[in-house]
Image 1 (cartoon, rainbow, N blue to C red):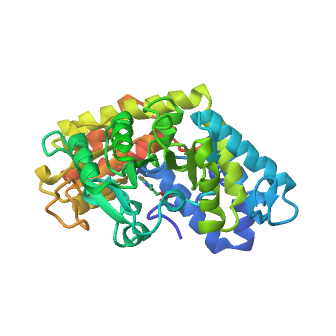
Image 2 (image 1 turned 180 degrees about the vertical axis):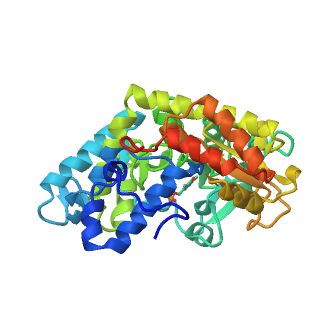
Image 3 (image 1 turned 90 degrees about the horizontal axis):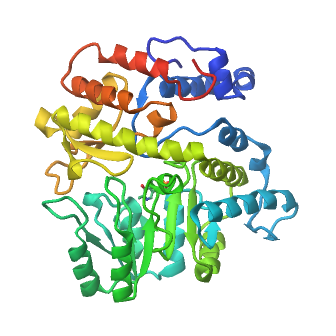
Length: 428
Ligand SMILES: *Cc1c(COP(=O)(O)O)cnc(C)c1O
């Protein structure tokens, strides 16, 4: 399998990116081709998905290590399996680094994903049938915030809050009204397509007023928090859940932070309640990512992600796109495309045709079905990992504007840009 028009490369570049590739060439060439094609796709297209970034070689190396072979149900020092004394060290390191990085009393580093972290958080705090207040799905809530297609909507009684029709910001007065009317056992804040900072202190106040737990789902922003580029939810939340693969640049997985009082309940809710043996290679790779996220270089990355997002958002506005809330405070933005005579699906296809990878997205009150949507959703983590700055972000806005208008020749400029900023060291 090769990506259209480009022969499979066997350069030093992709050997550096995937050290096992030469072995795979011999033992499973079909899969080697698939991995190589994906590397090439990542390298030659502009990656603008809001929830993606590039991991470091160290994270990739630990993910591909022998730690994947080890069964380790339980927690360090209290495992159900024999021979865990070495992987215990890896998990202890991950926990120590996570608690230090986020200033939390307790961290559980075992959740398989952000969704699994939310499942465990709910399991620790709620029983089936309990009422939960969370951002409505059309406004940007995640599937695990009460979708009927998800365990959350099936097992709990979710009430959705929205955004102010004029400002597009979370309507805190309405959140309070709904909290007083429904008396939820937990309030969830955090979203998949909300571009602004969330007022955690205001949520805390409302949670206290109605005696609810406050769960912050920081799946998207955890990396920005680590880098000091977004407000810290830890002092306000009873439980913070998140992913380690989005802005944090770690392996695909979840994380839960909480105070000492809830530590045991959270741990029991992860294992044995909702998971089996932890993926120890992933746990160890999380430890690597937490160490990387504690460096000044990571703080520079986090600040640059936000600066790039601001520049990209204002550039897209100049191109005639309608930015949700008028812009962004974070890495992500939602840009309405109907002013250009397109829906989100069509806009995504036009961008894809030019080598620009964006998601389609609905906006609050979207008249179009979710399969089409009225907007595209973009994030700047991947391009920032590649070393792009505000000049490139402005160029990307211009490229997207032209791609959406069907102007020819954009793909060649995208190819030039991505060639100048390879995603992984050693790639050219
Ligand atoms: C991405 C995301 C999740 C889920 O993470 P997965 O690892 O895909 O399961 C949960 N909540 C929010 C707000 C997210 O953005």
